[in-house]
Image: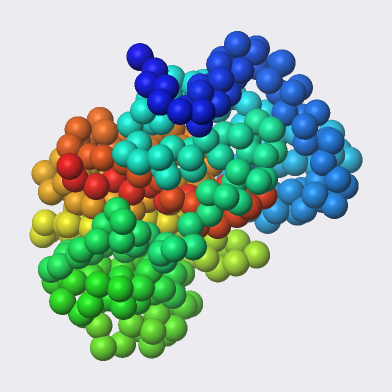
Length: 314
């Protein structure tokens, strides 16, 4: 791939990629580990506690010599240098490129300043007017509705004529009274279903820190129906948001036909695991080449969270 270096940010990003590429996995792991151990004890403890509550990124316990988090991060970076280069080149604006650069700088060098600078306070999460200024008569599928905040923002920002139908998927049935109360007066089809690659039986996996982080898994006590959007939504979909705690890849695979045939606007939480930064844009691009990509950071100035991939029809 021919690198397009237009400015100092491009140069710094590609220099960082070359550093990842030119060091062995063990060398890179040792480098990142030393960087982590140079942080203050308070910061180290903060990271340990966070990864203990949210396990998407591996475990980290200095006292037990457990650096699985750093190992997973190292392996992902080493295995996906070409994907990182592809994505940086593919991103449509320098705001997006800066977000990606800030994320990788944070992963390698624990650079908190760049991550903080990449935070977006201008618009509400999922709805950046500079990227997506208009929505009208949308068939909106909200995968991971939680309390309905994204749907409320959607209608508040674009008006009540912004949608034709809204489908809301949420696995935690205990919060349905709150969802119904929040979304009263709106035409929303609420479904207590997990969304994945295919129709099957799954079970609720509760998160002790937050109900919003509940997931669906293969074993458990409380059964949940899992469906693919290709099978569960018959009409043409024009807009999909996904935030399902690491299940986004399977959910995208399960709406492959909608992506191919309908080319809906896609708003995907891309931060639940290191691999998703690389695999999800590639997957969408493989299904349909008619997409342009943006990244926005809506949370986390110590570690990347609330990173949203916007994939919009060209």
